Length: 289
Image (cartoon, rainbow, N blue to C red; front, side, top):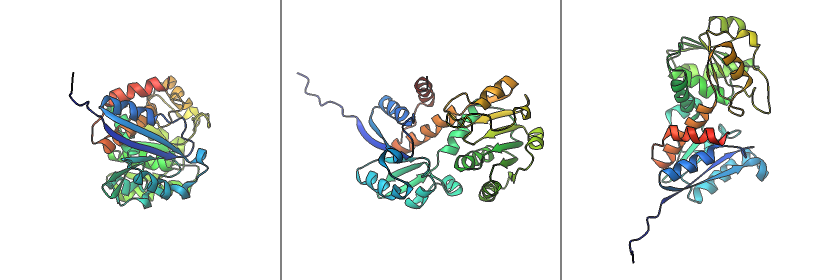
């Protein structure tokens, strides 16, 4: 008779707080990777919409997760900015971005991180290696736009011209990020055709192209094969912009990599284990069919 005690996997409990998150692939990615790493990994969806809650309930939800022994939380729309005031400490990038998508419960302290920008940057480095970042045009100045503009500057962009339907929001992004990036010039764009004519590449950071917001975010005739194009939308993975840019001959980065690599970094923050990024990417691709 074998009397040796069975090895009990380390247990880890995390969650995602946001609105309309029922289709999120993040829980499956985390739990599958946790299994590969020998963890008993539970990942809960805490959907404001299905619970009839709002951003005002965020403090109570974070308190509850901490009291239940969660290792941490992912935070998504519309809670990323509100969560900043509910942590004890921010990572340097989160301080710059004033937005967090990951909270780690560490002892009696809550540490806020932003892995969105790193996820975009890591995906970009792998998918668009060697492209010029001298002059970048970006569409979108919302929360995701701030993260990817920060990422582009961190990767060495010389200039980033921001276009948004709301010029005040574009100006706010420029004013927020410029002090943190002395080597990169941020500006509010006014003439998209002229900007793209002089640019090396285009970053798209608006909801246009999502299943609920189909279509192209710009006049297709403004694209040319000398531009690279980076997308952040990943439902669907081949947006109209990705499809048309490929047909035009552009080097293209779809939004799947950002979705995976933000999860890669969050997993590492929660567990202290560096996950197998390529394995998580394969799992993500299998989940989206």
